[in-house]
Image 1 (cartoon, helix red, strand yellow):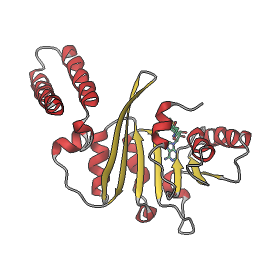
Image 2: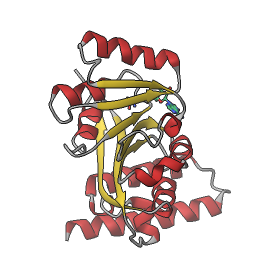
Image 3: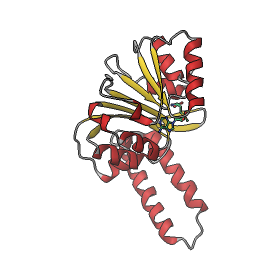
Length: 219
Ligand SMILES: C[S@@+](CC[C@H](N)C(=O)[O-])C[C@H]1O[C@@H](n2cnc3c(N)ncnc32)[C@H](O)[C@@H]1O
């Protein structure tokens, strides 16, 4: 049984994707991709031996060692020009780590990125767009009480407004997501002491913007 989060990430994988799942850990997503015939083979990696070994054990248990190749190493450093990979999948890490991973020579071969970062989605969008990718899909989901955002990028150039980079060009039209952001802002605002007026001012601005965006969704 895999989580709804991993299932939703898997839903963005297409037959033609030649994938590396970086930071595979348990490799449950990759086992799901093969067992559900979404892919015939997949390459997975992890920088920590213990995590990769957990993945290898699960892969062996499912008798999928011939279809799921495993590599130990840091990010895209496990790839060389001999590999035929066009899609990078990274989930369950923070944006700083994800951006460090993407700053690699091999990125020139990558057409598609499927990313579920745990934080800083504005920074993620801004920096990945600078690397020459456009946003083709975004999804906000709640799984086991936790909030997640999945972003799919493809090679290409697109200009985005400040608000689109902040909330996502697709998620900016998603009422459930905007309401989640609004509630977060209200919660933070209630914790801020009254003398922190600059912070309060910024939050009020954000709250007003979110209310306007939410209203627009309903029209
Ligand atoms: C929280 S787990 C996420 C596992 C899985 N991707 C998921 O979404 O459920 C993060 C994994 O990323 C691995 N990791 C962190 N930094 C990495 C890097 N630079 N290169 C490869 N793996 C990394 C960690 O060892 C860990 O196993």
